[in-house]
Length: 379
Image (cartoon, rainbow, N blue to C red; front, side, top):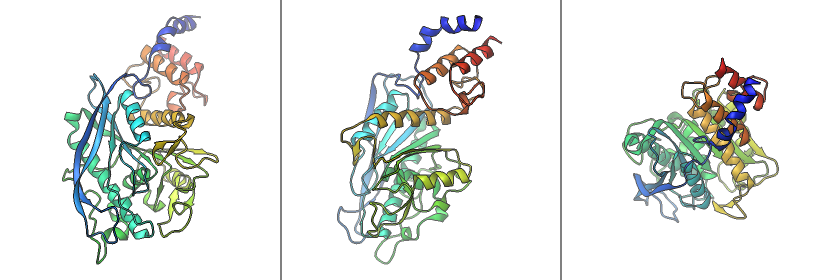
């Protein structure tokens, strides 16, 4: 009875509290546009060889909560879709995700990266991905260099990519310098693209992220994923995707000389083999960008999958932010009523979760875990 009275007495508080990084706790956000993070040689829209480049500034938009007093905030970098020949950092989906993330307390970055792809050349396709990897590396190194003024945690930088943006995220996370595709070294008519961290800016920091969200992406070589790459990864993919294969195949389904790639199902299997923390959310029969977008712009969307993907992804990232001990749900080094509030909100919002919140270790996250947590508090 004492436990029940304790729980009921806080019921109104429990129902009204939101959890930072899981729920939208801020009403308004600030957006800083066109922040230059680097400069690099860019290709013209139509090209035959890659020597005819012009240096351009690489920029990003930064979204953050209005009137946020927190410092050392985690970052999510969003990379847009567009098959490496279209798209920008203001497409509908990455813009809405950036706003949603800032309202949850993140610093959100929606970045532009260099485009340029000859769809009739696997050589060009590999180089297009690699230039994007270099740009993402430059963006991460810029953020780590300026972490104090941006009030961000340089050790909590996450990547969230859609389609081509996911290709970039996966390749940066798991492809090391000694695994560069041969095409990136160039030929008689095309320049050597240089090392992964050698373009964009000269900041000397690691370019590896702390976690990755991949929406309908793929990777060029599964062997690049090895046990040294302990980067937690959550993957979303429609099993009937005709643009990026769920299993293995060519982009756009047909072999038009683009390189063979390996999709989310095979990536997930490889991650599990290498003991890398990972989740796969495969939607049976769904197509590309199944959250209701076409090439990054809403088309009969956003739909219910958009909310589901957000909830799953934010929870996954939340678990990377906090390394919780039993009962310390909010990771403040104390087990108290605030942890009960956090656990109740997780249950009420039907977030999928892992064993971190299974206090009684019965394989389910429910009211019994709240009762056990209250017991821990009451001693």
